[in-house]
Image (cartoon, rainbow, N blue to C red; front, side, top):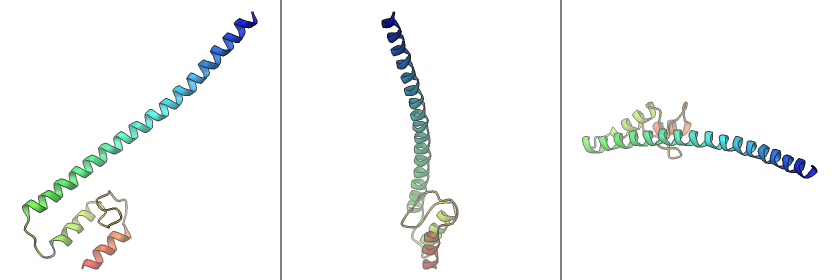
Length: 105
């Protein structure tokens, strides 16, 4: 009888460990989902920036001051124009970007 009880305890212990493993697997699944969503957002952002850059290169002849206008436009659209985070979405003002714009005007 003691043998059956120890086997039963081992099965319960295994069941508990499987439950913990299942919870950890759920957390990893949520993290993976967040990473996939972020990757998709960044891919769309990157595609938007490439399309925009391609449009300016193909459709516009260089005009004095146009580069500054392009940088200002990117900044106004919510993108960094500083060398630290160029092309990344920004939240709020960036002192490096603003300094970059001031030094060009």
